[in-house]
Length: 97
Image (tube, rainbow, N blue to C red; front, side, top):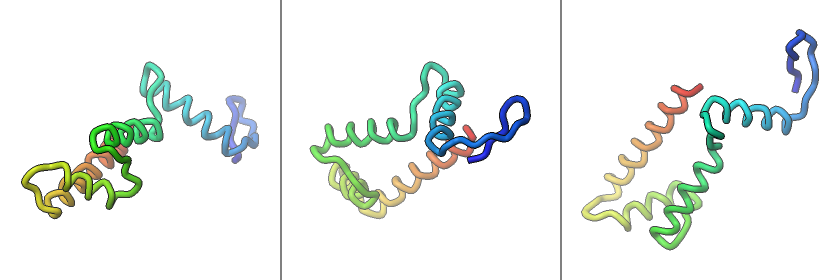
């Protein structure tokens, strides 16, 4: 990947280094160390596993778990709930870019 340093000189860095830098910038923006998307996702999936006894690997598995672990719902209710959660995440992503 090609970047421009503070003196205006173009230099090449690896994608790994670009990701490391992006992570550091994210930490600064989030304050107090921040949290990566991967750690946020894994923590949520771990918490779901504690509650349900298994860790979902796909959207469909998570929807099925939501259906089984909520009272008086139809699968259409779960679909709507899931899409609403995705919208919330999307709006958040737009806000923090």
